[in-house]
Length: 229
Image 1 (cartoon, rainbow, N blue to C red):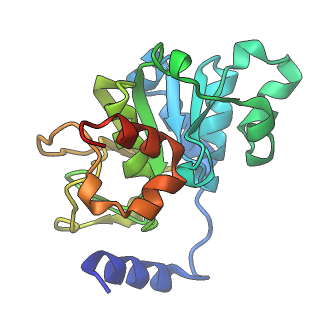
Image 2: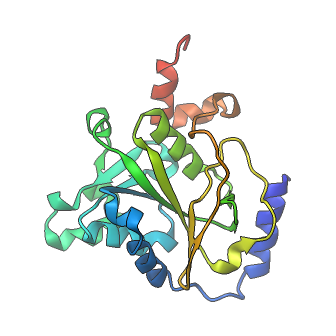
């Protein structure tokens, strides 16, 4: 078991059944108040339950919402609220309706998108923006795909929606492909993080088994485009 896995297991075991669920709606309202959010035309948000209200607010505020498909297998879904009947806008933020109301992100559409605002959650977070997620790595991989396909803006904000109690002293263990957070937002407060300078996200091909690459359509397409593929 890696150091990350040990920390994750310890934190989750300590909290199991003892801590009431945070008021994620209040945290989502704090996201709404950020200048970076107000300036964004498109918001990338993960599928986590904690982000439900963030996704709803994004669509209700008239912003396009970019979502990963389950396991990133089919890439991304784009939901454009201005193209939906008013009664369906709120529904489109729910997992059940996303596949029906969202459109699979085509290359032509992707070329028009610029993603400058991303939201995810975390099991733990440090003051330098180091994030410990669920261990599957889908957020970091999604960010790398957005960067490799030129959808990620040159300057972007990564908001981590989590409880203030998840902020740890010291530096969490990090991998080269980990994407650091810019801000921690909890129901109670906004904490500015101070991530060190780090290179633009990219795909670390040598760290990805071929079997996994084949299961994720945008990864497979990118691999086929590589010289010598």
